[in-house]
Length: 549
Image (cartoon, rainbow, N blue to C red):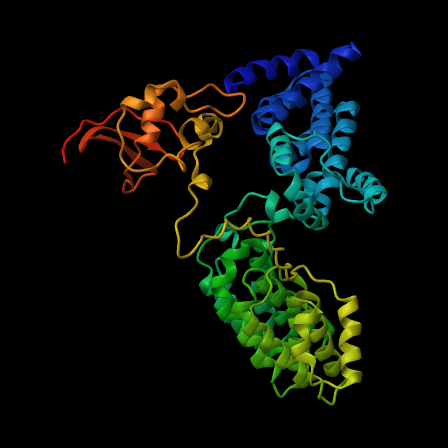
């Protein structure tokens, strides 16, 4: 069904059928909407349904919310984009009709099954405290439920399943193990926060008074507190925050680290270009012993790593693992372990070697925390690449250290795993071997249609080995006593065929063919020449006589 026709059908269903007093009509209307989505995609259907949330009749609004709940329950948030509906929830929760608010709660709970905490930043602040409390109580009931699964497939999905049923059983089993995480960044629209940054931000950072510096970074943090930030030039802001890492006041350092974290989370991949500005200053400040400060610094480093990858960060990490300050070394070690746990890309072989060398060096440290950290690094790497691939890296360790590494290997949780090499497909059947030093048997090269032809074989080849003598006359061939008898069950050869067989005094193989030229001679004259195909044993028409002996 075309999009225009679909829209003409969806709108009347939403306006007239969903709120019908007849249960069968309601059910059929919902089934029709589900079928529209199944046949194509969900976006046009949802787009036509959303005006129903602005209907003046509360019963229609509640019925539309209920239909949306059924759609998300059957197809999930991977097939049906939840963003347009999430934007409409605050208005539904603010409705005067209790049935509308109840259906809005049901829809929110259904969306929470799929999106979890990611739905909150989008609309949570627009709800009343009592509504937040009621929803939190409902969320607690389903918080520990297993991840929901799509109950109804699109036709395109059904076709894909049917087409790749054999191959996808193995690949799909592994893919199904990992639940796709959805966060607020995926649901939110980018916001331009440059206009919300205090105009005196840079002046405040340059102030000699720590309170003014703290107020400057607090104002920036307030502007950055959005789920998704529209990309812009934040170079100067990052340079100012990097400079704050050296501030004598720990409150300024903590708030600056939180600003870096918020900016990196809001930009995601767009923040990668600022990594070189802030990463080393943050790692230098890891010497801070206060837990609140070190936690803020660690969270900032994690957010920076999320916007980049192991290749970008490993050089700095390796360098700071050799820092003379034990606090810096320990903080860097913990950061590396978190990177190994969260990365979705398996490090390259040179990177694995570098990480393992750093981990083995930590095993010889005097601090128990550093020694355990080195073993945890090695155990986490083993979890990623597997025991067999890890063996060369731990061969030189003593049994006690190997045991420690194995313990961390068994408890490690990672997101990147080395995929096993695909099982090679069986080789196709070998072609028949060629016969060297001779010609191929002509029978094996027969065309498919030649299989029925051998019925004519006795007519040409039966007496050929006996009657291939010297030249003789043709007159005596018609005598009855000279007649050649056919094998039992076959017709006798006619006189012309006998003459052809008796007069095959010269046979030569024609080039690039599978034929014999059968020449008939009499008294030194070439009377006729026939071509006889050895593939099908059929006699071809006469060739004109071109020469005479």
